[in-house]
Image: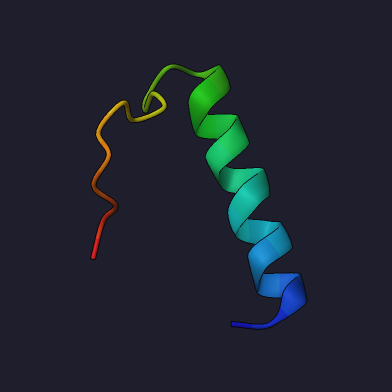
Length: 32
């Protein structure tokens, strides 16, 4: 994954967090 793709992904995740579609995980396990 390139730096620009990572930047875009972070931006999209932040937008979803703001809209409450997702929330930060409290699980110690990451997604595959």
